Image (cartoon, rainbow, N blue to C red; front, side, top):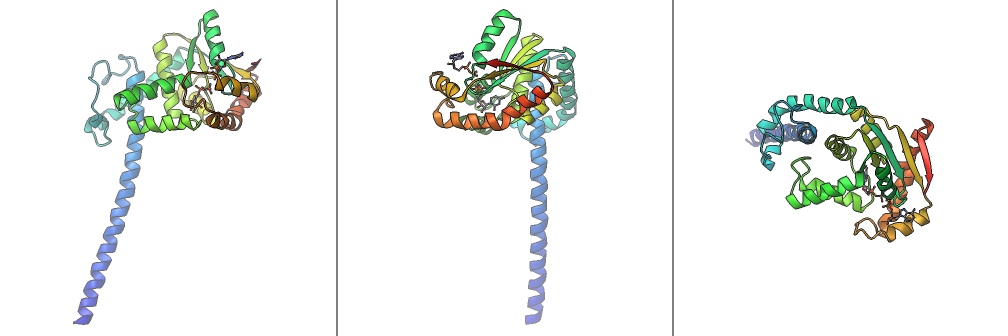
Length: 278
Ligand SMILES: Nc1ncnc2c1ncn2[C@@H]1O[C@H](COP(=O)(O)OP(=O)(O)O)[C@@H](O)[C@H]1O
Ligand SMILES: O=c1ccn([C@@H]2O[C@H](COP(=O)(O)OP(=O)(O)O)[C@@H](O)[C@H]2O)c(=O)[nH]1
């Protein structure tokens, strides 16, 4: 009797254990699927934002009303149906941007070295469009936090808060977000000459931008300025920026030295850097 009971117990435990393993494997698979789809959601919304209506044949923000957040849910059947179309359109967008053969000048230099100030001067004299990556990110945070989420970029409140925190900490925001904002601004500007200010900030930014847009910069303007001077300028910039405090400024200097200088070195080796004593 006792033996039968033990046998039963053994089989019961065995089945429970197997179920737990199967359940865990299922969870892991679902999670990775979810992550994969979430990447695609990002991609698809980027296209919606970037594509001129004629390029996205089955889907455009101009034709379709803004989607409710439920649409962006990874299990949304509409979204699943769109993926093929949107992926094809993504290629179109990048091809169309590269086809225009835009002139791109990267404007790099430490925080407070005067990039924004001089870009405004350059724009006055030459027909460039000035795109500050930092300004685009701050505008995105502002519009996203006002609306709860940003329909154009599919940045949910959580992502927007994450980006806001990264800027507060002086960290570099993921390339995917910054490149999407730059692409959109480039397409919308109608111009073919761009001063891209404060980007690429690291090697990954640089490689991703070139791979995605197929655009190489004409040259790089490097504003070289001593740290003490940059610190003095940032502390009196007075634009109400959350990252213009001494603690974050120091972190930004570190990130510049460790991550951004190698980008300048990379372009120096290609003979593309024009240095400005700033
Ligand atoms: N050559 C300069 N001499 C003194 N102050 C400057 C100079 N260039 C810019 N500034 C000031 O320094 C601060 C930072 O300049 P900004 O152009 O915003 O730098 P960045 O875009 O590189 O962060 C601003 O308040 C700006 O007015
Ligand atoms: O391509 C970019 C540009 C900016 N930033 C973030 O935005 C902040 C401010 O950048 P901005 O260029 O506006 O300021 P600057 O360095 O010129 O003072 C940076 O510290 C980063 O956190 C980023 O992550 N990627």
